[in-house]
Structures are given as structure tokens and as C-alpha cells.
Length: 358
Image (cartoon, rainbow, N blue to C red; front, top):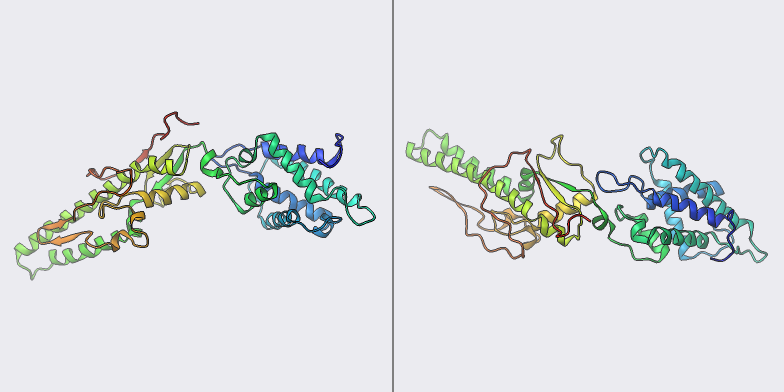
């Protein structure tokens, strides 16, 4: 650090205040901090900038550098942020940090020399303080533990000259509860439309009194067989989805257990959505084998399952599915379930790691 630090030195008080902000990181039930360091630092800098009169005053006595550019970006982000949830006692911690960083900024201006330069340029002083905070709490990975990667975390990592860890999957410890709405998935796959087109054709034959009874009976049998087959197909997909969880957890380096909740999207008990559940859902959707095709969506990028040829062939005696090819991935979920899942069935996975939750 560029100068001696008595206890009332603004750099010391800034270090202490920002360390307190960083250490208050209780996780929510979705595994993320309610008040993450990156966004709070942006808010703190925005408040300091307003107090001292703008960036011209904040950076007085120092040339424009990459550090001033990054801090300016944080100020802009903090200025645009809407008020977050009630921080309770944590609000006082944030306020003390605003006061300390304001004193640090005013020190830079107070000691501008005759050559117009400050011996304590704010951008460098703040970066020194942040670097010491990171060292105190155990590194940048610990600083961002439990937080999603955002533009603000990226900016702070660049300011510190440190690589940004993939914190969201690595540090979450709470279970990741993901929703599986099978009807919604099949709709996105185009399979629901495909099924309904075939059903409508059969139903028109079932109710057509001009057809011979034998033809109507065959159509009725085919209709019921198709409905039963589609129900079994959805149940098999749900089983495949759940059985793909360990593979996806390993691919994402996720240490938390994943719970799959089979419900309709708008049910009151459907799990909440957060950035990690979205990431896990996308990965599971791409990796899960669709029974109608015998392939996972990632095996045919750019095409929906319903767009593949021969997903179902309708004959006079019912629906016959084409032969299913072997999956191309190392994990082969079972496809032998014929039991329909109740929409509210909750299926929980086990932690995929041999040593349990860390």
C-alpha cells in the first residue's frame, strides 16, 4: 500500500467496512445471497459518487485508467439499480461502507499536489482496499460464493485482475428444485401438436356414423391405444428426465442435490425459478432421451423431436413406434416405465457425489 495506515486512515476504515459487507453472506433457500457483494459495491460507489459531486471530483488528481473506467461502470450500474429487499440490520453495514469510501474519495482530492496529481488516487486506493478484502475472506471465489455471475461481478473481477470463478454451481449447497411440466416440454418439442393431429383424425372416424361399424370399432381401438401410449410415453420421459440428473450434475460440476418436481407450471406448489434452476433445466432438457425418437435433443441440434422422420406410424390396428436407436451419450436412462405420473408427484434425486454434500 502506498502509505502508512494509522487506525483512522480512510484506507483502513474502508477495508474494515467493505470486509463487513463481504462477510454478511447468509444464503437464501435458493442458494444465493440476498445481498451480494458485487451489486452492493455498485450501490455503495453510486452513493459515494453522488456525495462527492460526480466522477470529475471522484477521480480528481488522477489520469483516466482502466481502473477508473471499471469503477465508472460500477457507478453507472449502481445508479440504475432499483431498491432491493429490506436489508434490515445489514443496511447499517452498507451505510458504514458508504461513509468510509466517501472519506477515502475526499482524501484523494484533499492531497492534490501542485502538479495536479493526487498521491492517493481514488481508483488505486479503492482497488487496494478491495484486494485486501479478498485476501481477508479467502479469495475471490469466497467473495462471490453463492452469487450468480453478473456484469457487476465480472467488472469487480477485472478490477482485481482475477479470473472469475463459476460460482453459481460450485458454491451452492441448498437443493436445486427444478420443475418438470411434461405437457409443457412436449408442447415445446412439437409432440403435443403431432399427437393432437392424429387424435383428431381418429376421433372423426370414431364419430362418423356413415362408416361401417367395423371401421369405427378399429378407429375407436386405435384412439384408445394412442391415448394410452401417449400417457405412457410422457411417464417414460419423466423417468428419463429424473435418471439423467446425475449426468447433468456431473457435467455442471454441481455439488448440491437436484430435486425434480413433476407438476404443471402454474401449480401453486411449483418450485421457484432462479438462474441456476434455469441452467439445470436447460441442461436436463437437452440431455434427456425422448422416448418417441430414442434421442436426446442435443443429438439433433436445430430440430425439434417432432421434426424428426418417423416418430410414429399410424396403421389400421393402432400406433406402432419405430425401433429406438441406442443413445449416443454415456448415460442411458431407462425407458421401460408405463406408469402415468400424477402431476403433483415429487421425485427427488440423490446427491451424485460419493462423499455426500460438501
